[in-house]
Length: 268
Image (cartoon, rainbow, N blue to C red):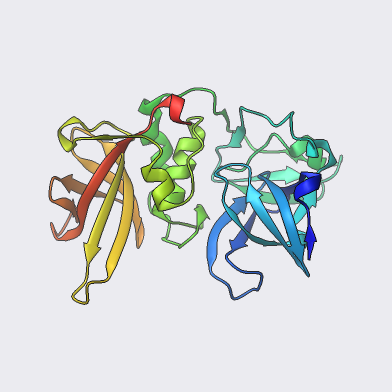
């Protein structure tokens, strides 16, 4: 097993979407995904796998070697962009040659800063520099994910979980949230439900008849109507109260409220 720590080796995801695994084998649990253009630091390798740390979110896990491209440009990484350029089309294309004959699909949230490094050209229409921390845009960003299927560890319009959903929306606002539950809980300051604002992160807990605990999270979508966006079967809106999260249609209680966190720009 080769250790890369001393070399500060970085790589770029050049495919539309790839899986980051807990262990280095195909059947291992997916812990997150990488979208096109995302950068990772390679920590070590084992056979066909790299153990990596994502530049955004600092998540560690295993990826297949042949799904990323080593980037000499970022070997020192002092020139890492602090402002990222995102594709905001649901699906768009990048061309792989000068004649625009060979093309590849990329997804909402793909990072375009590295198109030049990959020698590819973005063919989409809608782009976003994440330099504006404007929470009033959360509703429009969230709407792009409504109806997306739930997928544990998912990060895209083909499947996403609540942690990934919150992380992606805050990326568009210029905030780099961690990918794990505790990390997001520690990313801001606790607020009372009487003082909620759009964009507040909401954390829930529930226990079944055997005492097994279920953790869940979401984001305040509309403070006036106490609406929370989260991934539960699919990305959807449900109702928040001091008692917990309730199905907006059936009024059935889904989860008990744990606490609410406010994210500010200086926490990113």
